[in-house]
Length: 77
Image 1 (cartoon, rainbow, N blue to C red):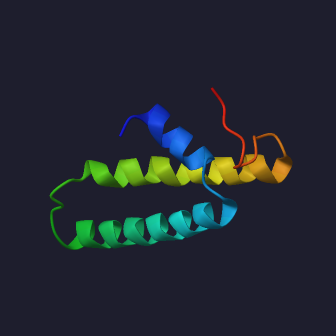
Image 2 (tube, one colour; image 1 turned 180 degrees about the vertical axis):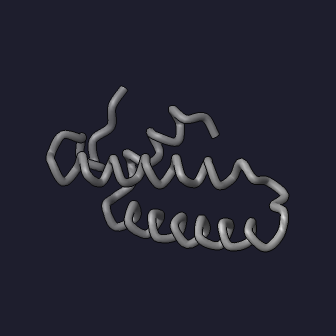
């Protein structure tokens, strides 16, 4: 998925969905790190991709807390 599409998809989600996605990604990241220490991963770049997604979600949540991001119900062009 392209970065622009991913950002748009995240902006359209509600806060509860973002928090759920964040927890899910953090759990997956933990499991991948644990697995990578014990054996070779089939796709080691997945760790980097998950870290970037976690950062995107945290940034969006923080922007909404500060009121600098558009609410989930509005769409941008």
